[in-house]
Image 1 (cartoon, rainbow, N blue to C red):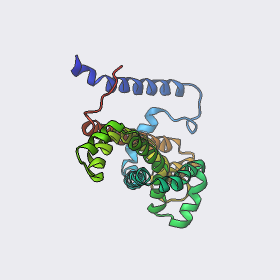
Image 2 (image 1 turned 30 degrees about the horizontal axis):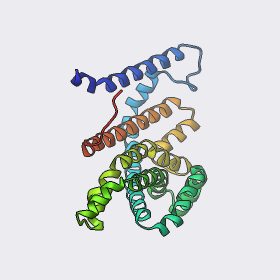
Image 3 (image 1 turned 90 degrees about the horizontal axis):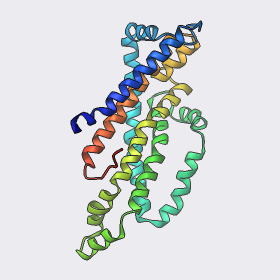
Image 4 (image 1 turned 90 degrees about the vertical axis):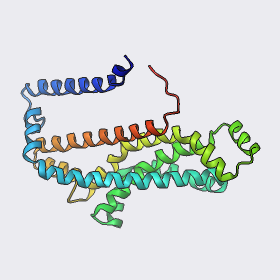
Length: 254
């Protein structure tokens, strides 16, 4: 039974996906113009006939997402560590981190394109901005909520500050960091796509914008479908990695 329960989320996801496709197909049976809502068959055909072209642009977007996620996670973890050990840095940087989230991402996108150009750098920078806050906030919260008893025990055993960080603080903060990484994996494509919408000649965002201007809704839906699959694959990969790394952390079962 336990073996079967491991696949329950997968079966639920497949059932939900098939149900949404069936509902989509039923809606297209109504007198809805194809340029407003293409049928699943039309989108599947667009995926097949334009697979090479869509594959190229998908690779561009996926590269931007991965690059932004790696840089954003690294910067977020470094800042969270710095704020944990320096109250002065925390007082100066935390308002800046919060302010960065108060500014709409769409407002920053044109500036980043102006500063970094129409290449990949602006899209990576957008992804970093989107990822940076959840990782920093989650990891910092996890680091400062370490049980004082664990730290007292480590000091009693003569552990140095570095040993306390490696063996106590980091391990205790990993579940919180895992939550931030899962959120980052889910929102990482947002930054890259917004950057491609503002200014780009490559990527799935460019494909959707160009197809929308030409009223090629089947291509637009095909690019959106690839983006959804890409996001799900990234989230599942991060989740699987975290489950392997933090297998000691208790999880509540429903």
